Each structure stands twice: as structure tokens, then as C-alpha cells.
Length: 305
Picture 1 (cartoon, helix red, strand yellow):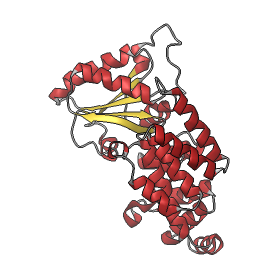
Picture 2 (cartoon, one colour; picture 1 turned 30 degrees about the vertical axis):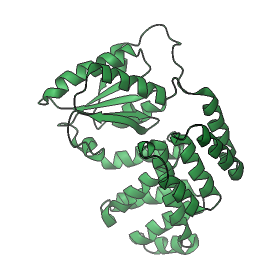
Picture 3 (cartoon, one colour; picture 1 turned 120 degrees about the vertical axis):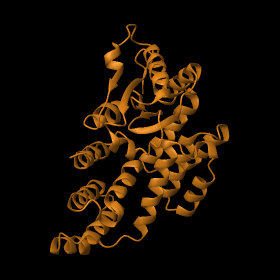
Picture 4 (tube, helix red, strand yellow; picture 1 turned 45 degrees about the vertical axis):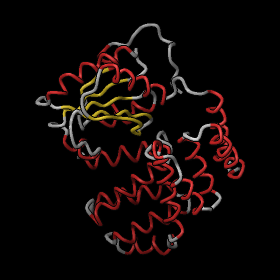
């Protein structure tokens, strides 16, 4: 967890605020956000509001003294990144924490709102949170990781009695019911989450986990699909089905490897199905999972090659 207030000296501005391109976006944003939140400012030289927002955002980031970093992306020079993140107008600002977008806004806003945004990002990434509930959430997540899904579900439900806007508790409850093979209840919980947190990263990840669980129910036999791929390496459907079957059997790394191979062979196949499936798997896992970090790096190198 990010610890605040331990360093008395402020980091140099060059360490906090950087111009980022497609070549180093993974390193400077996705990977860097594993330890400190990164605010990404999408701008262009011709954008009038950007000339006001950019300096104000830099000032707020500098004032935070290392609790957050900033990456500036020129959309004219980095159209692929802007397209992938669906940046439709500028200025657009996203905040990333542990590889996932957690907050953002579009258009120029008042300096007071910018400072509030930065404070909120710091808080979401481990700053001033409600310690008691955080401890309970961590305990419930550990129960779930250890296979005690029923106990975890009860704990998550109790937390929601105290904080019915906890995206983390909702997501945990969904995952607990997935582990109990109660997909119908998991979907009902997900659909019942309050609208204001429905797009939270935790719930997006739970949604991805539910999608994968549904796929697992119809996954084919690994042995037969492996034989089909070995007999015809260009049978893209068989390779895609094999990846689903491998994931359903808990062989996530092998599933990712098959999807990366499929993407490399034909990235456009079935409306980029391999890439979308990879994103679903990555989203369902913890952002700092080695499978996610290595898989995203490999996929990025293929996309930007």
C-alpha cells in the first residue's frame, strides 16, 4: 500500500511529470502505477483549454509531493493510445492505479476541482481510507484466496451493511459466488450494484471474472482441442476454444500464451477476438499479477511493433 508523508523532500519535477509516448506508455503509466497512481493528461498543441488545464494539473501534482505522478500524452503524436483508451475529445484526463483507470474527467475544470481530483486519486490508491473496513475487506479477500468462499461471502455482505457503496465489497461478493458456482446470484449482485460505482475498476474486474466463468461452462475438452491445434496450427477457432478450455481448467498462463499466439498469427480474426479475450483475462486478475504484467507487455510489443 502506498505510504504517504514519509519523505520530507519533494521529488524533482522531472521524476513526477513526464512526456510519454506509445513506446514508453506501458513502462511509465501501466507499470509505474503499480506503486504510485499516475495521472495521464491527453492534450494537443492546438487545444486551447489544454493550455490552461495542463499547467494547473502539473501544479497540483507537484503539490502532492510524490503521492501521484503525471504523464502527458500528445494525441497528435500518439493516436493509437488515444484510440485504445477511447479518448474522443481533449483535454481528457485519466488516473491509473495498479494498471487500471480509476478516475478521470474531460474538459477544462477549475483549479480547486483539479486539486480535489488529485486528492481523490491519492485517497483511492491507499491514502486516507477507512481503516476498519479496509482490514475487514483484506481479511475477506484472503478467505476467498484460501478457498473459504462461504465465509468470505458472509464477510463481504456484512461490510456492505456498513458501506453500501463499497465497490471492493461488491466485487468480492460477486467473486465469492462465482467460487461457489452460483453464477446466477453473482450476476444478480453485479447488476444490483449502485449506479455510481457500477464502472469502478473492481466491479469491471468482477464482471470479467463472471464472463470467464460463464465461458467455462461451455468449454471443450483440452485434449481434443490441443490435438486439433497441433494438426492445424492455423485453425484459429480451435486455438481460441483451446484457450477458453485451458482457462476453465485453471491453466491461465497457457490460455494467455495461446491467445498471444493467435493474435500474432491473425490479429484481425473474428473482430480481434484474441485481444478482447486477453483483456477480459487481464481485467479479471489482480493488476500486479505476473501473468497480467508479462501478458500486457507482450501484447503491447505486438500492437506497437
